[in-house]
Length: 254
Image 1 (cartoon, rainbow, N blue to C red):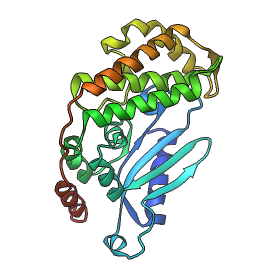
Image 2 (cartoon, rainbow, N blue to C red; image 1 turned 30 degrees about the horizontal axis):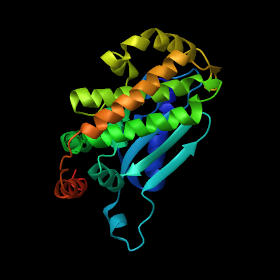
Image 3 (cartoon, one colour; image 1 turned 90 degrees about the vertical axis):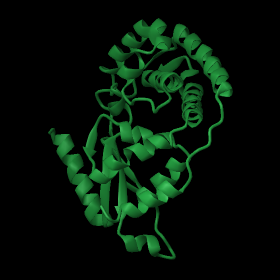
């Protein structure tokens, strides 16, 4: 275990002591979990926690998030289990990403046993809606300029490929970019991806470069194509609240 990992584990223990919570699952999220961190990328640590039972019976419940640290090295925050389950009911994609992160700092039997339930709430439509919106936001905010922050191209390409993964496999997209770039839709831009990865892995977070017209054309084409495929997806009924309520109650017995 590296020194940074030891520090993260220590910080998670500090959170438990200071906030009187039990951390059920803690992972890396963001570029390090996606597999294309820059030399100075921060550590995006995300966690799910459970408070003592009495905290959920108060007339004035506290916040359902813990924002522990935000600086040049760490971005550490977490969700209450209750918040996570409520968002899971809506097939929130962040829940699936935290579940699938390849970098796990801590987990629990309870959370691992929850995985089949989490997967049962996955919705193709919700997933594609989330990722196409994410891709468009990042493209319009960061890539429509003469000088582009290089990492932002990946913040567009990755969610577009996540849409194609969902269309092909009907399950949550993997976190690792290396698993997504093998999709057929990415083959025509593989040389551009290789060039960008090489630059990004050796350039600071603020590294910039010229726009890449060929990549812009690919992005615009797939914006339109995914939107068409999204409209053609059938509506599906989502599972109800009963299983989520039972899972929440079970957390106090584990």
